[in-house]
Length: 276
Length: 267
Image (cartoon, rainbow over all chains, first blue to last red; front, side, top):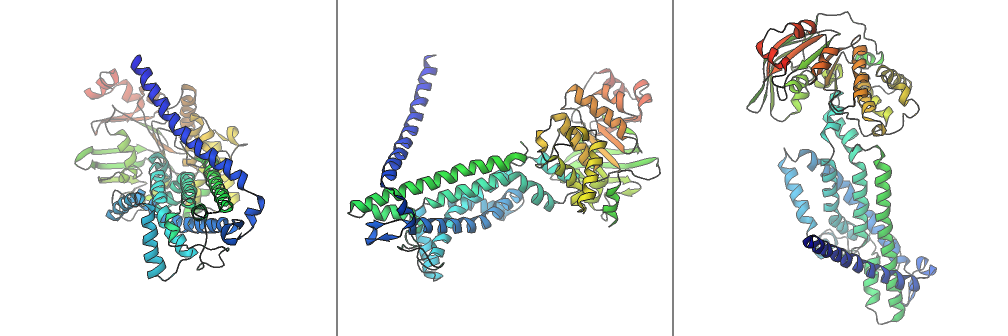
């Protein structure tokens, strides 16, 4: 009995530590962010090197970069995940890809940044730009999407596939009309979570997307983003800049939270037809 | 396309034949395991044939070899012939998709597709090329009526199939199998996961369906076999021990192993 109580106490304490530290961060960001934020910051470009004006450049830049990165990543990652899940038993390429995706997900994000700089910025001559940043970020999101797609597709019960096969469906029809349908809520959730993860990253963009005080006018112009806005503004020796750093942190947190939250709604809505 | 034309009417207008399915020296191997041993049997048209036997005797494998679902198992090898209307379904010229259209299957556990009630039934006709909405609607309605489910679901066709009860899901799966207008229905212990009332409904449905379809059902339940079967086949360790009309089989079995099984010595 005593052991049970002791173990339970340890678990409760551990949970409290996790929850407490998360709450402290969240409350602090919200408290400082809300007091610093004014509506004009959402619609104005920065002035006086960040001491005045707003964060429109970083907000729009972050949305552009993360959206593009997620599009690139999903259009490669979802088919790759499907392939791995369906052919892992038979294809060496599939098994290798699965392993590479696992390794990729453990690579520190700054490495992606350096790689993006060398490959996209220099070798492919894209310069520091929205496109180079988005492509680099896409690499970071790729393992998340591949692994999540692979897992959800593998979870599609075999009796569901057999139902379609017994009606005369071909392997391709089963994959496109049944397996994908059953897995789509999971895949959609994974894509949204990858977006949220990408939106919060600073390191891969540091050397690739550049930074600008303007809204990017083309794929090849440099683009600001919220994580780097927090970093640059907090490094400045001016209280006005610090205020804006906290406002940017608050906006970023809200963006990530709302995407996470909407992924749950998507999962519920799309999951209506899913067979358990 | 003759195939999709064949799908549209639910009433097959074909003359009765003596042996709807004729199995000739069928052997099935999974890797090195010899699962079905030299089975030969003639399945009568538009009657209910019950396959009985202890667990692991190859009942399900036998059923799955009649619509080539057995080929989906990694390492499966089939020799011998399965003649459907006189054509060997394992001949290289035959398309497995067409075989499975003609030989429908209902599984042990209801397995709805991840879509609405309507789309579940329309799935088969759609993959076989029927696009006309009116035709599809009629097919879905007729199939659901034939499975005795129409009155229960006609106002909720857009609801997820998983919102139905287990017994309703099983009848939906039967309706889905009927929608592609098969000639034979394979049923793998179709009532095993159902409550007694739902089981009774499925049993009376089988009785109704044998007027139009040749039905082969696997069952664990001897009482059920006595109630529904016209013809019985007893499998033991991959061999066909005895088969014959239900009356004869249950009243005067010949093989000692059949007699022991019927006495409940092993199950």
